Amino acid sequence: MRVGVLDIGSQSAQLRIADLEPGLPPQPVATVKQPVRLAEGTDGAGVIGAEAIRRLVGAVTRAVAAARENRVDTLYTFATSSVRDAANRDDVLRAVSAACGVELATMTGEEEARLTFLAARSWFGWSAGPMLLADLGGGTLEIACGRGVEPAFAVSLPLGAGHLTRRLLAQAQPPYGKKDLRILQDHVRSVLADSVATLAEEPLPELRVATSRTFTQLARLTGAPAAKAGPYAVRTLDRAELVRWIPRLAAMTPAERAQLPGVSQSRAAQILAGAVVADVVMDLLRVERFTVCPWALREGIFLERLGSLARSLAPPKRARPLSTSLTAAPVRRSRRAVRH
Image (cartoon, rainbow, N blue to C red; front, side, top):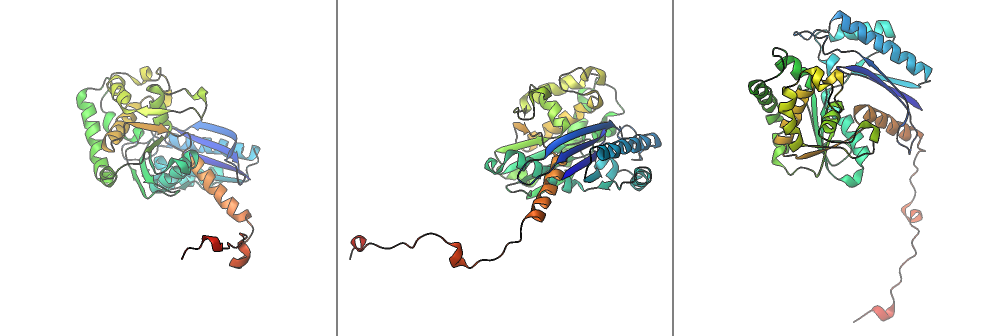
């Protein structure tokens, strides 16, 4: 089965197409990425403007056409917090449906955390043991923890890099001073403190995982291998290195940050807020190093669909008498082994 997943984020609309076959990981077919820049098109009241809606409609239209060209059997379209939390969300969804002929779904932050956890669990495998996950997007931060496929703990918080940049840094201009950083750090810490208090009291899993473009770019900035090294290269985000970069990022303009290794132009304005969130999360949870996972939400959707496909193709199980299912020969006791 060929499946497409179209993910609408704060910066871009990204379509990933993969072939799904039970027993194999998703096999990539094509990726189509279109800028939508919803974050910059959203005003202080949370209303997505007309021009941003037009960009979104255009991006979805092109993605649907690409799905048809690649003969996709099923197309999943969803929007994250950039649309889900917009004041005019229903108007945006209606505009997309009317122009593109698809229903753009939204999911809760906790559902995003669950699916991303599934993707990371599948990437690292059962042998990795219990896992802590952090996923930092443009609008929200998700944290999840557990030992199985489903997280035992999952929370979504309004601490996305783009959201914080618009809310707390838009009134100032770089270079940002210590006061600007302290306001941002205090806000992140206050929102996080109660939500992660339970996790902070318990011994954390040995496997601490981070996903998302923001974490990947921060890892690259602090010395992780470049994208050309491939998805199997080990990438980590070291907190000590991250802390050294925060004042340097604060002193730079977005144009200057975009010249740094791994920092894209579209995320240069919000990479400082992302770095601060990552630092505070690592501090509160006593994490010195995150391992970056290349699989995230979209892969989680693929994997959940793959699981459903495998179950639908499995032959029905018929109960058998216990005696016929056992093939071991009976054990006979030797008289010589008996002691009285």
